[in-house]
Length: 113
Length: 113
Image (tube, chains in turn red, green):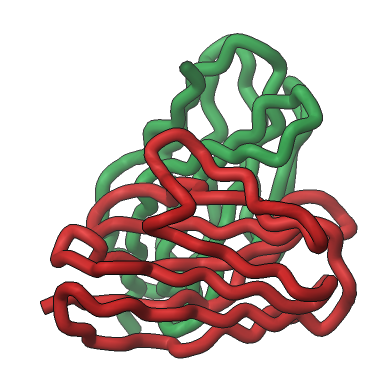
């Protein structure tokens, strides 16, 4: 299955700033997914990123807050904008696995102070 | 809507003990069920899956049986090892062909030597 490299692995950011998370896949994939895992909670899908089109956002998530780029079939970025402490979470990217299910990156642990 | 409930952790066991992590679900359709594992510092990995009632998924000594009558998908292993220490997530996809997953909150397992 695909190998996903995600960076940074962790960061501590000041409120009001933005952080861009990168996700690189070792094979071409049509769809890439971005998830958020808030402390003590389950994973929540933020958006789906297709190459060459605007990302599709889930309810409760908006492009102004979480802009996503998908410049090619192996790469995507998620930006967390104008951060507040409530944005402190683990952010993960994922892709479909050929055998079913999904493969996830190692996650970015974000702390906003 | 669809949901997944799994037992709270942490679960602490001695090496070679029997493991059960409970997972129950609610779904209106015919979901596929998954267990994911997240080792420290790594991304989520698909551990096993079952796509229809009475299917048994198995991998690395772990097993889970899709029980439609009890809406459960409990994870079991007969003899745990220290290397099994991780966070385990139960998840479902709604079976409609969409990519959307519903995840449980995760159960941390700690195995002591």
